[in-house]
Length: 284
Image (cartoon, rainbow, N blue to C red):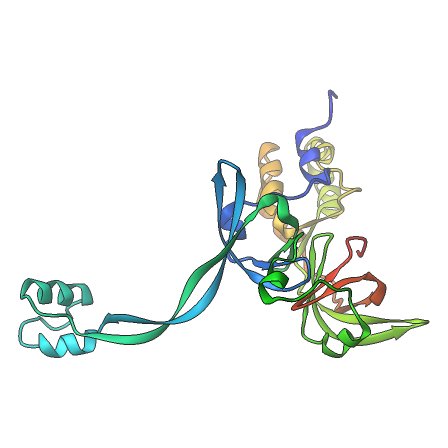
Protein backbone atom coordinates (compact mmCIF):
# COMPACT_ATOMS: atom_id res chain seq x y z
CA UNK A 1 0.00 0.00 0.00
CA UNK A 2 1.40 3.38 -1.02
CA UNK A 3 0.53 6.14 1.39
CA UNK A 4 -2.69 6.61 3.33
CA UNK A 5 -5.99 5.95 1.54
CA UNK A 6 -7.75 9.18 0.54
CA UNK A 7 -10.98 8.34 2.34
CA UNK A 8 -9.17 7.43 5.55
CA UNK A 9 -7.80 10.98 5.58
CA UNK A 10 -11.27 12.33 4.89
CA UNK A 11 -12.67 10.81 8.07
CA UNK A 12 -9.70 10.68 10.44
CA UNK A 13 -7.97 14.06 10.07
CA UNK A 14 -8.79 16.43 12.94
CA UNK A 15 -8.88 19.53 10.75
CA UNK A 16 -11.40 22.28 11.50
CA UNK A 17 -14.48 22.04 9.31
CA UNK A 18 -14.98 24.59 6.55
CA UNK A 19 -18.38 25.98 5.58
CA UNK A 20 -19.93 27.39 2.43
CA UNK A 21 -22.03 30.53 2.61
CA UNK A 22 -25.27 28.58 2.33
CA UNK A 23 -24.27 26.36 5.27
CA UNK A 24 -23.69 29.37 7.55
CA UNK A 25 -26.49 31.66 6.43
CA UNK A 26 -28.70 32.39 9.45
CA UNK A 27 -26.17 31.07 11.98
CA UNK A 28 -26.12 32.91 15.31
CA UNK A 29 -23.11 35.20 15.81
CA UNK A 30 -21.86 35.69 19.38
CA UNK A 31 -19.00 37.92 20.50
CA UNK A 32 -16.18 37.01 22.89
CA UNK A 33 -18.31 38.08 25.88
CA UNK A 34 -21.09 35.66 24.94
CA UNK A 35 -23.34 38.48 23.73
CA UNK A 36 -25.47 37.96 20.62
CA UNK A 37 -24.26 40.16 17.76
CA UNK A 38 -26.65 39.01 15.02
CA UNK A 39 -26.97 36.34 12.34
CA UNK A 40 -24.84 35.48 9.33
CA UNK A 41 -26.31 36.94 6.13
CA UNK A 42 -23.52 36.32 3.62
CA UNK A 43 -19.78 35.95 2.97
CA UNK A 44 -17.85 38.32 0.73
CA UNK A 45 -14.37 38.25 -0.78
CA UNK A 46 -12.76 41.67 -0.82
CA UNK A 47 -9.32 43.03 -1.62
CA UNK A 48 -8.28 43.05 2.03
CA UNK A 49 -9.68 39.61 2.90
CA UNK A 50 -12.73 37.42 3.35
CA UNK A 51 -15.55 38.94 5.39
CA UNK A 52 -18.57 37.65 7.29
CA UNK A 53 -21.62 39.91 7.00
CA UNK A 54 -23.82 39.98 10.09
CA UNK A 55 -27.42 41.20 10.07
CA UNK A 56 -30.21 41.73 12.57
CA UNK A 57 -33.98 41.81 12.17
CA UNK A 58 -35.49 45.21 12.91
CA UNK A 59 -39.09 46.41 12.90
CA UNK A 60 -39.75 49.51 10.87
CA UNK A 61 -42.73 51.44 9.53
CA UNK A 62 -42.78 51.41 5.73
CA UNK A 63 -45.14 52.74 3.10
CA UNK A 64 -46.65 50.38 0.55
CA UNK A 65 -49.50 50.26 -1.96
CA UNK A 66 -52.91 49.75 -0.33
CA UNK A 67 -54.07 46.84 -2.49
CA UNK A 68 -57.47 46.62 -0.80
CA UNK A 69 -58.23 50.27 -1.54
CA UNK A 70 -56.90 49.88 -5.09
CA UNK A 71 -59.23 46.97 -5.76
CA UNK A 72 -62.18 49.10 -4.70
CA UNK A 73 -61.11 51.90 -7.06
CA UNK A 74 -60.70 49.52 -9.99
CA UNK A 75 -63.49 47.04 -9.25
CA UNK A 76 -65.39 47.93 -12.46
CA UNK A 77 -62.27 47.72 -14.63
CA UNK A 78 -60.57 44.47 -13.58
CA UNK A 79 -61.50 40.80 -13.96
CA UNK A 80 -62.15 38.81 -10.79
CA UNK A 81 -59.01 37.23 -9.37
CA UNK A 82 -56.59 39.73 -10.93
CA UNK A 83 -53.16 39.69 -9.29
CA UNK A 84 -51.72 42.64 -7.37
CA UNK A 85 -49.18 43.39 -10.10
CA UNK A 86 -51.97 43.63 -12.67
CA UNK A 87 -53.84 46.10 -10.48
CA UNK A 88 -50.80 48.35 -10.08
CA UNK A 89 -50.01 48.18 -13.80
CA UNK A 90 -53.59 49.07 -14.74
CA UNK A 91 -53.72 51.96 -12.29
CA UNK A 92 -50.53 53.42 -13.73
CA UNK A 93 -51.79 53.03 -17.29
CA UNK A 94 -54.93 54.96 -16.29
CA UNK A 95 -52.86 57.67 -14.63
CA UNK A 96 -54.32 56.98 -11.18
CA UNK A 97 -52.38 57.87 -8.06
CA UNK A 98 -51.64 54.67 -6.17
CA UNK A 99 -53.25 54.68 -2.69
CA UNK A 100 -50.66 54.09 0.06
CA UNK A 101 -50.74 52.91 3.62
CA UNK A 102 -48.15 52.61 6.37
CA UNK A 103 -47.41 49.15 7.78
CA UNK A 104 -44.94 47.82 10.31
CA UNK A 105 -42.61 45.17 8.90
CA UNK A 106 -39.63 43.18 10.06
CA UNK A 107 -36.63 44.01 7.87
CA UNK A 108 -33.10 42.65 7.69
CA UNK A 109 -30.47 45.28 8.51
CA UNK A 110 -26.74 44.71 8.10
CA UNK A 111 -25.13 45.38 11.46
CA UNK A 112 -21.49 44.78 10.71
CA UNK A 113 -18.81 43.09 8.64
CA UNK A 114 -16.39 40.77 10.43
CA UNK A 115 -12.97 39.73 9.05
CA UNK A 116 -12.69 35.94 9.00
CA UNK A 117 -9.60 36.28 11.21
CA UNK A 118 -11.90 37.38 14.06
CA UNK A 119 -13.80 34.07 14.11
CA UNK A 120 -12.67 32.13 17.19
CA UNK A 121 -14.73 29.01 16.46
CA UNK A 122 -17.82 27.72 14.70
CA UNK A 123 -19.83 25.45 16.97
CA UNK A 124 -22.51 22.96 15.95
CA UNK A 125 -25.18 20.96 17.70
CA UNK A 126 -28.22 19.30 16.21
CA UNK A 127 -29.31 21.79 13.51
CA UNK A 128 -27.82 24.83 15.27
CA UNK A 129 -24.65 26.65 14.24
CA UNK A 130 -23.02 29.38 16.32
CA UNK A 131 -20.15 31.58 15.15
CA UNK A 132 -18.11 32.81 18.13
CA UNK A 133 -15.97 35.90 17.61
CA UNK A 134 -12.60 36.60 19.23
CA UNK A 135 -13.50 40.25 19.88
CA UNK A 136 -16.13 41.92 22.14
CA UNK A 137 -18.02 43.54 19.25
CA UNK A 138 -21.48 43.45 20.78
CA UNK A 139 -20.15 44.40 24.21
CA UNK A 140 -18.67 47.58 22.75
CA UNK A 141 -21.89 48.22 20.83
CA UNK A 142 -23.88 48.03 24.09
CA UNK A 143 -21.27 49.88 26.13
CA UNK A 144 -20.56 46.83 28.32
CA UNK A 145 -17.06 46.28 29.70
CA UNK A 146 -15.35 42.90 29.45
CA UNK A 147 -15.57 40.80 32.62
CA UNK A 148 -15.08 37.32 34.00
CA UNK A 149 -17.97 35.13 35.19
CA UNK A 150 -19.19 35.74 38.74
CA UNK A 151 -21.22 33.52 41.05
CA UNK A 152 -24.06 36.03 40.70
CA UNK A 153 -24.36 34.87 37.07
CA UNK A 154 -25.59 31.51 38.32
CA UNK A 155 -28.84 33.13 39.45
CA UNK A 156 -29.72 33.93 35.81
CA UNK A 157 -28.06 31.02 34.03
CA UNK A 158 -31.27 29.08 33.37
CA UNK A 159 -32.45 29.05 29.76
CA UNK A 160 -29.15 30.22 28.24
CA UNK A 161 -27.60 28.35 25.32
CA UNK A 162 -24.31 26.67 26.25
CA UNK A 163 -21.51 26.62 23.65
CA UNK A 164 -18.06 25.04 23.98
CA UNK A 165 -15.11 26.81 22.33
CA UNK A 166 -14.04 23.36 21.14
CA UNK A 167 -16.87 23.65 18.60
CA UNK A 168 -19.98 22.11 20.12
CA UNK A 169 -23.36 23.55 21.00
CA UNK A 170 -24.11 21.48 24.11
CA UNK A 171 -27.66 22.57 24.79
CA UNK A 172 -29.53 24.73 27.30
CA UNK A 173 -28.60 25.50 30.91
CA UNK A 174 -31.39 24.26 33.18
CA UNK A 175 -29.99 24.97 36.64
CA UNK A 176 -27.19 25.00 39.18
CA UNK A 177 -25.51 21.88 40.59
CA UNK A 178 -22.81 21.40 43.21
CA UNK A 179 -19.97 18.98 43.84
CA UNK A 180 -17.22 18.80 46.46
CA UNK A 181 -15.93 22.33 46.84
CA UNK A 182 -17.37 23.84 43.67
CA UNK A 183 -20.57 24.62 41.81
CA UNK A 184 -21.48 23.82 38.24
CA UNK A 185 -24.31 24.11 35.76
CA UNK A 186 -26.56 21.37 34.44
CA UNK A 187 -27.07 21.45 30.69
CA UNK A 188 -29.95 19.81 28.89
CA UNK A 189 -28.39 18.21 25.85
CA UNK A 190 -29.63 18.88 22.35
CA UNK A 191 -31.20 15.93 20.61
CA UNK A 192 -28.35 13.67 19.54
CA UNK A 193 -28.25 12.46 15.95
CA UNK A 194 -28.50 8.93 14.65
CA UNK A 195 -25.38 6.94 13.81
CA UNK A 196 -24.47 4.10 11.48
CA UNK A 197 -22.89 1.04 13.11
CA UNK A 198 -19.97 0.77 10.68
CA UNK A 199 -18.19 -1.95 12.64
CA UNK A 200 -21.20 -4.27 12.69
CA UNK A 201 -21.95 -3.54 9.04
CA UNK A 202 -18.46 -4.57 7.92
CA UNK A 203 -18.48 -7.68 10.11
CA UNK A 204 -21.71 -8.82 8.46
CA UNK A 205 -20.55 -7.85 4.98
CA UNK A 206 -17.38 -9.91 5.42
CA UNK A 207 -19.51 -13.07 5.56
CA UNK A 208 -20.90 -12.45 2.06
CA UNK A 209 -18.27 -10.29 0.35
CA UNK A 210 -15.02 -10.61 2.20
CA UNK A 211 -12.81 -8.76 -0.32
CA UNK A 212 -15.13 -5.79 -0.57
CA UNK A 213 -15.36 -5.60 3.23
CA UNK A 214 -11.57 -5.65 3.57
CA UNK A 215 -11.18 -2.84 1.04
CA UNK A 216 -13.77 -0.77 2.87
CA UNK A 217 -11.95 -1.41 6.17
CA UNK A 218 -8.77 -0.06 4.57
CA UNK A 219 -10.57 3.13 3.53
CA UNK A 220 -12.33 3.71 6.86
CA UNK A 221 -10.99 1.81 9.86
CA UNK A 222 -14.03 0.39 11.73
CA UNK A 223 -12.08 0.09 14.97
CA UNK A 224 -11.26 3.79 14.98
CA UNK A 225 -14.72 4.66 13.64
CA UNK A 226 -17.10 1.99 14.97
CA UNK A 227 -20.05 4.34 14.61
CA UNK A 228 -20.30 7.02 11.94
CA UNK A 229 -22.58 10.07 12.39
CA UNK A 230 -25.57 10.14 10.06
CA UNK A 231 -24.14 13.38 8.64
CA UNK A 232 -21.42 11.28 6.98
CA UNK A 233 -23.94 9.06 5.19
CA UNK A 234 -23.17 10.48 1.74
CA UNK A 235 -19.49 9.63 2.15
CA UNK A 236 -20.32 6.07 3.17
CA UNK A 237 -22.66 5.73 0.20
CA UNK A 238 -19.84 6.82 -2.09
CA UNK A 239 -17.48 4.25 -0.57
CA UNK A 240 -20.01 1.44 -0.99
CA UNK A 241 -20.81 2.35 -4.58
CA UNK A 242 -17.12 2.19 -5.46
CA UNK A 243 -17.07 -1.40 -4.21
CA UNK A 244 -20.36 -2.32 -5.88
CA UNK A 245 -22.14 -2.71 -2.54
CA UNK A 246 -25.80 -1.69 -2.29
CA UNK A 247 -25.91 1.48 -0.09
CA UNK A 248 -29.46 0.67 1.04
CA UNK A 249 -27.96 -2.05 3.24
CA UNK A 250 -26.89 0.72 5.61
CA UNK A 251 -30.54 1.25 6.54
CA UNK A 252 -30.36 -1.90 8.67
CA UNK A 253 -27.40 -0.50 10.63
CA UNK A 254 -28.77 2.93 11.50
CA UNK A 255 -29.09 3.37 15.25
CA UNK A 256 -30.99 5.83 17.39
CA UNK A 257 -28.91 7.93 19.83
CA UNK A 258 -28.40 6.83 23.40
CA UNK A 259 -30.64 8.66 25.87
CA UNK A 260 -28.34 11.09 27.61
CA UNK A 261 -30.49 13.97 28.66
CA UNK A 262 -28.01 16.25 30.40
CA UNK A 263 -24.37 16.94 31.20
CA UNK A 264 -22.94 18.73 34.24
CA UNK A 265 -20.31 21.40 33.61
CA UNK A 266 -17.90 22.53 36.37
CA UNK A 267 -17.99 26.27 37.02
CA UNK A 268 -14.22 26.38 36.37
CA UNK A 269 -14.90 25.50 32.73
CA UNK A 270 -17.23 28.46 32.18
CA UNK A 271 -15.38 31.14 30.21
CA UNK A 272 -18.09 33.78 29.75
CA UNK A 273 -21.71 34.30 30.71
CA UNK A 274 -23.62 36.67 28.45
CA UNK A 275 -26.69 36.02 26.36
CA UNK A 276 -24.93 32.70 25.72
CA UNK A 277 -22.68 30.68 28.05
CA UNK A 278 -19.23 30.05 26.56
CA UNK A 279 -17.15 27.14 27.85
CA UNK A 280 -13.41 26.79 27.64
CA UNK A 281 -12.11 24.72 24.71
CA UNK A 282 -10.76 22.04 27.06
CA UNK A 283 -14.29 21.06 28.02
CA UNK A 284 -15.40 17.86 26.23
